[in-house]
Length: 492
Ligand code: FUL
Picture 1 (tube, rainbow, N blue to C red):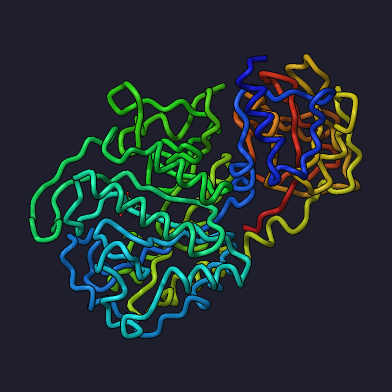
Picture 2: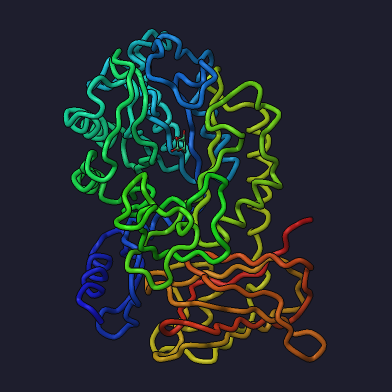
């Protein structure tokens, strides 16, 4: 094992956030390849969370504000953070990421760095703070809070000059120190172009690789919010999935060694997006994918899209194509001009949320007798697969590259969804698996896949009724390690 792996593991085990995991450094299984950091491990457990895209665009009907908008137009008439957060919660969301500043440069909090903010809006006589109200409502209702801070700022006169990078960092510092715990920091990849820029009204081009000084900015995040994960096209913690349709590739590795669009080193805004949906098998970096998509055609609210809200069935399909492939499902739900989520969005979220909760309410494999082809000595028994805890795992005997686990169910069960979770803190090991059902005296394959990672859902075309199920790991880079297994029945 390389020193790098050992040191990654030490960092992981040393951190307070990783405390529940009882890997024994000396005698337990050693991680294979890249593993999640404590912050990534916490992030993997969220799976579904939302964006709120809100700025002057909401009032001008634009998607990208030019930066010359009069701040006084930002004036939601019935702003209610609690109502918005509870609609997200009903939709099963575990976190909310607010566009604290989009490309137009308008800041939703009374920043000291610019006058282009809520301070100069009519809303609450210039005394309001959207970031504060959303973060507090989220904390109150048990959702985590994240910040989107656009690097590209079409309002700021300094954009394109070194001074702006200091301003950007100062904005980030305000957001990371004044609003409680932050779970995710989101840097989008749209960088440079024409804008207002303090009245210059011109085109400004920056060098994506060097201009923002990302390593220094990311250090600041680490220092101020050590458990926050940082998102960009290329991480360093969470990667863009490569499309804005909310879909990961069927095989989606949590490890990824990104390259630039035309080769060479990747950077935020310059990545070969065609590879981002799949990642890199046995890649050097743990860099799981996030699937961002809007519940409407646009990222911001537009009256003429009120009838184009995605249905609960479409949201469920996206859930299977994101979370079900080991990625996360970041669904944007944009506030309207009242400062509320539109009724159609709220209804769709609610229905999706209750369908999701109902789907996973009962694991039909619970209570089954479990037998594995091999098990590592220690506390890695196969019964852990059914204890509902990600912190415990079944690990096959050292050296095993294939393995089988058989579940004798308490009775016959009918199911059409299978869920597997890999013990990702030991690395992404499994490269192929199949699931068989016992039918008419023989095993019949009912599902299969390549990557498992933190979550793999297999949806069967037809429900299967059986008393015995078997998971076959047919390819694994190191002894297979799974933490959970479940069988579920999705309603039609
Ligand atoms: C992109 C932006 O240009 C869009 O407006 C939106 O915010 C999306 C989530 O990220 O880079």
